[in-house]
Length: 62
Image 1 (cartoon, one colour):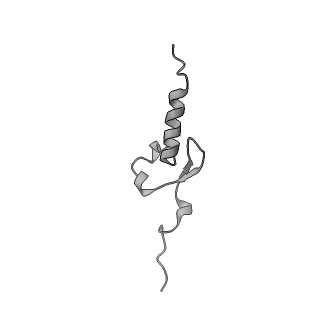
Image 2: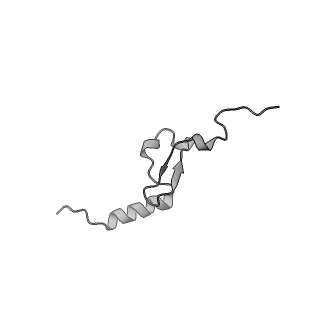
Image 3: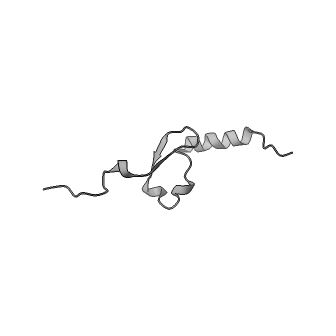
C-alpha cells in the first residue's frame, strides 16, 4: 500500500524566518498559524533576553 502524498511530513515546504535574537531559523508551526507575522522569537529564552536587553538600552528620548 502506497502512503498518501501531500503535506504530512513535508517540512521543507513550510515557511521559515530567523529569530530576532539568536538568528536561528524558525519553521512555521500550527500553533503560530493565526499570528505568524507577529512571531519574532524561537523560544521563551530568546523572548526574555530581548526584553532584558530592551530594558537596559537607553531610549534616546530626553
